[in-house]
Length: 454
Image (cartoon, rainbow, N blue to C red):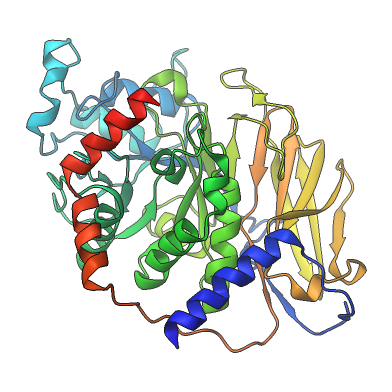
């Protein structure tokens, strides 16, 4: 029965990709739009702030070109409000402390990229906003360190990476990880067992979707990632934007597929946008804007879980499925990025206000359902005016502007249907053998050799 349910869920996702309207259904059928921004106070004396940050960045403690002090100063000068240094296999500690180091990265000393951390005085100045900017002025706005972050599977050749957060002490440092599917599972299990939160990193890099974009629509990979998120409650979602989106330009489409796979079980897949910066020139690439009452670690953790934030990217290639029609590339140009300034749900209507945006498009079940210009006026999407809307599993919004592309989280559509109950499907003996062997370095090396000759 559980296999049948999973098969039906995958088939439903494929059907939804092919068509989002069901002829003969009534658009007035009752359902509820679940607003992930429902608690946000958008205006008035108690208005929440919009805080810019990234949960995935690197230093010379792993494989970055710039040190922790250099990277931190660049983020601070680019108006970031929170930051996680999530080095490969190294769990982040206070920025005035040296973390556990790994033998793998001692090459940094050979190429004159030394390990460095902040002084206690510098660290306190960053945390209270008194650290001087490049121009010598005082910012007067703190940057919050998100500690206990670690990019897992640091010895992986297949880029099956997972970011863990809020891990205690140095837990997770030195976690080498297996390759491919087995490595994802091991990392997520470890993070959950140690009380952390996680998300999948740059899945397109592992899928090699640049070479074969259709892989993001493959039911095997949709169910693989979807099952991981259903199995591990602490796995909140996946990166949708990563750095310059060089290897991840189709991860938005994968995200849509994962939403359709997981929502029938009651899990909304949260999308993340991170710089994954290894040098300062990528600090202005992809990032998130969290809506919070106050910028502190408790609210950051809460917002990671409830999805009350937006994803921004400065650079992404075109694609024929949901756009953009032309490449976006505005990194390091100092342009204001599109931003939502109000979102309200009333019945079957979603109303939006935004700044620095020229166009808004709405995505439902992997398809563009509406697109219009946006200015100072409120834009309202009325699902009752769209045939087949009662069959949508979610709706999400995308803002296009001179300064980049900004995404909302998904607004789940709750039609009152009974939720599916996730049951893990046991592997056969043969599948276990294949899974184990694909997790070895030998398999990964063979795969890299094959790719080199393709």
